[in-house]
Length: 242
Ligand SMILES: [Zn+2]
Image (tube, rainbow, N blue to C red):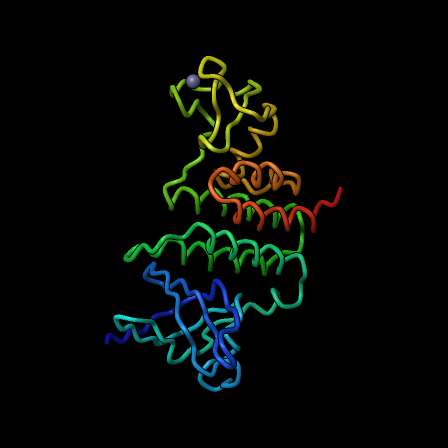
């Protein structure tokens, strides 16, 4: 039996048996922890905030050979704007869903934990759909980079030939990016302008963000995780209904 203490985000929570909750945590150390919180549907004292996502908790949990038990969760930080602003909340929940879909247990790599906290702070700071989309697009690509699913938008994923900046290209999500004509091409055509905007936002130029970019991002990510793409698609429907 080993006891652990860490700061953590709740990636998922679902009722378990009569009164328990089953939660998925992402700790500051990069661990992805699936734990059972006994009596959590009732005990608001041991599990402050009822273990809802979009808050930062300080948790204690115990691992045994058979299971992991969450002993306590105290709220350490909340982002009130995420509770008030529907757009901000939608973006933050989508980011949580992306991490839940693609995060592997990666002890000693706190990158996803940091990225998610930054995203919550950024989402809480704005209600503008283009600004939120820009944050979410960059977040999604960074999460893919950190989980070994880097997407190539500047060169062919098969032969490494650079794609000229002004070129319309084709993309194969399952291969992880641009595929040149010589290598057989991909199923989706991406205009030079769309690609330039995506690359700019990915590099941190948030001013280039547009809500429509989320459609491309969802499509590209579908090759890595259908669930992650679904999280983004939910935001697309909310921000940019068509
Ligand atoms: Zn090629």
